[in-house]
Image 1 (cartoon, rainbow, N blue to C red):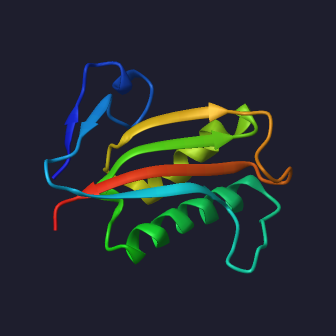
Image 2 (cartoon, one colour):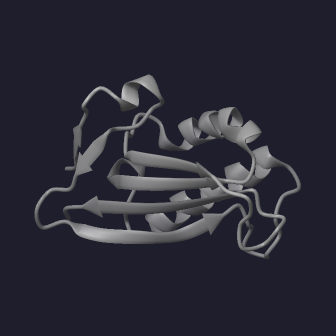
Length: 128
């Protein structure tokens, strides 16, 4: 089981932990930057649908390797528009629930494809 270490900073910003320690002997999973693209290559034309698809993809990748959101240790979220931060927080909360991985959110000028507005990178660890 992963252990959250809070120093009191994250609680003032959002629903995440200041640091997360993975237990010794864990199996690790690294998720590449995961956009809100469907399996047929379509990118939704609005942020809410694209962010929902990105988190659906993250959860699918976790599940394929027998991991879940409670196994997330660290997530990095890349958005191209600061105005989407509030909407993203609500969408992320639907998928992450009470899990509190370490987290970083960055607003960037662009992602690999210009029409992409979100990408999520993650690390997960679990003991089997």
